[in-house]
Image 1 (cartoon, helix red, strand yellow):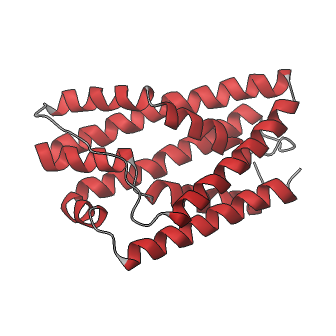
Image 2: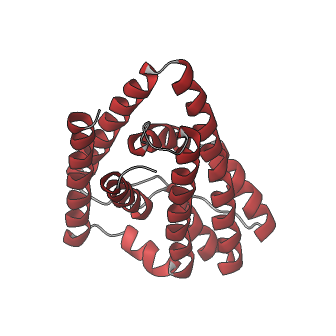
Length: 210
């Protein structure tokens, strides 16, 4: 497995991304408010299951590409570092809590909410890009564990941490919706702190890692 330093950076960055307000969190909260907690649980479960499609695609697809064209590993690593820096600056400069757009939820059964959530997550290109850009930053090619196995383990951890944030939204949908709808000094401070950490991680990856 990767070194302790890499794993610490991985969990720190994952935690920031997982608990930063995003479409999945808002969707789970909206389903809960519209149809109750049962629909919210099914929505969160659907998002979690759909996330594994991207995890497996990143793990096995990237492993094959890295073995066939090693230079792609370096290129993707630096591309991902730039991605982290860009997200950090975007978060730091935001004047209000980041908006993900309006979410409309019609009356649906919990089962339908589940399958719709799976479909939405699987077809979300931003999720695919995130896994492809994020996971390779924390893989150690010299570790005893195969690259595909490292990607699979790290991807599973990411998916579980993201789902923990969705579950929190289901439990506290009313409060979370209220917090997301306001633009206060605490929210701006959190954005700037999180943005600074992401920029620092991206620079560290680009400048200090082979």
